[in-house]
Amino acid sequence: MAEQSSNFIHNAIDEDLKQGKYTDGIHTRFPPEPNGYLHVGHAKSICLNFGTAEKYHGLCNLRLDDTNPTKEDTEYVDSIQEDIKWLGFSWGDRKFYASDYFDQLFDFAVKLIEKGLAYVDDLSAEEIKAYRGTLTEAGKESPYRNRSVAENLALFQRMKAGEFADGEKVLRAKIDMASPNIVMRDPVIYRIAHVAHHRTGDKWCIYPMYDFAHPLSDAIEGITHSICTLEFEIHRPFYDWLLDSLDFDPNTRPRQIEFARLNLTNTVTSKRKLRQLVEEHYVSGWDDPRMPTICGLRRRGYTPAAIRNFCEEIGVAKADSLVDVAMLEHCVREDLNEHANRVMAVLHPLKVVITNYPEDKQEWLLADNNPMHGGTRFVPFSREIWIDRDDFLEDAPKKFFRLKPGGEVRLKHAYIIKCDEVIKDAAGNITELHCTADPDSKTGGPTANRKIKGTIQWVAAPTALDAEVRLYDCLCETDENGNVPSDFIAALNKNSLEVIKDAKIEPSVHLTAAGTHYQFLRIGYFVVDPDTTPEHLVFNRVVGLRDTWAKVQNK
Image 1 (cartoon, rainbow, N blue to C red):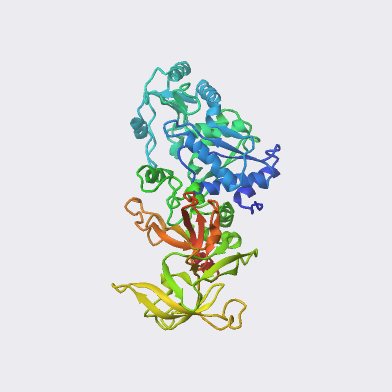
Image 2 (cartoon, rainbow, N blue to C red):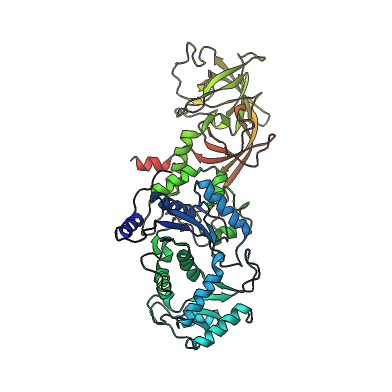
């Protein structure tokens, strides 16, 4: 991966280093919660955290923030690791879990209690919320706030021993119920949950809250810079208060820096909403190619290089903004333009019989694989071929430069043909075209350079491979600014998937592996789907050929 360009986070790191902090080197982390699959927004965080470590020749940990066993699963742990590796990053031997530190986190909580900075509260969740106050009104202290250190220690031990029901008690930090920052109004740092954990089993029935576990896990691991999305900015005072209260050295302890999360037009990036789409079967799974999950993008045919380049192109900002999804598609298109081989495919086949071509003849014509890196292949040509129905119009307007009655068109890599006769069935539907070929117009022939305005793709009928082609569109309808409405289920795009069962592809793609990319000439970029078998080809459209983002940039 190319070295990251500078941004305000790197400027802050440079300043820390100038001041003599973090002399042991820069150490970042990527800390996802294993309660769902990663999406394109996480890709930005992955690239930033791992990329920052690379830039400063430091380290980046993978830490699974598994503090909420009611929503977490090893399925998500496995998928997170697969996605990070697929993007091209490695955590080496530095894979950790928040649950690795449960004993230490408990001891830290005890230390806060001993210092008079935490207390056990009997208020219910609803009462705690009511006591917290508002942005314009100070909160109210809990009647249990002034319990003695001894009583709090005893109660906390009893919470750990499982003597209380879920929600019966919590441990709260004792800070300031009148703070203008609501997060600092005695936040809950431990809650009771009699739920088995995917790693620790039934050892624990109390679990630390994220805001408590995260900064302390950072400190335990020696993280220097905790790079978080902007919604955690309001939580930074508690991050610092906690490390101050537990006497971590300001010159070595982690520093939290926030950046704007990735918001894409036409894209749902809420993990809760994505889970709803999966669980209510609006999509086929987390890897449905319409999903913005990393595994969905992978199955759609997006490449790691394209996603990394996109994350580099959009940069790192301090304020939230909305990025046009066309920019991501542009990055995918640029990568595939360089690496994907060209082939010919017909999505809506219409048979053409070349009447002056021998019935028993077949010839193999030379075709270019990719103009960027060269290479050639042979494609078969015969008397009967398939063209796309959209490339023929019986009543064509003057500026229609494809095939029409009496008109000529060039077949890519082959002959110029002229339409002589349109064959229809009893219902008046066009079933085939009868054409004649200019025998000298094949590439390299005497009339090969004859001026013909239209060139179309084709596939020889006897050797064509049948294929299923899946065309994907945005999953949700959006407003004029590309924003997904709050009622996103009602806004789901009923035309987000079109399945074509009878497409025809040239035989060079036979037995290619899932994940192989092609440009279907004049149509778009496609990838072989994992549903493919030797008997059944399945392709997903990655992106079309039209690059709206590049056009905007070039204006």
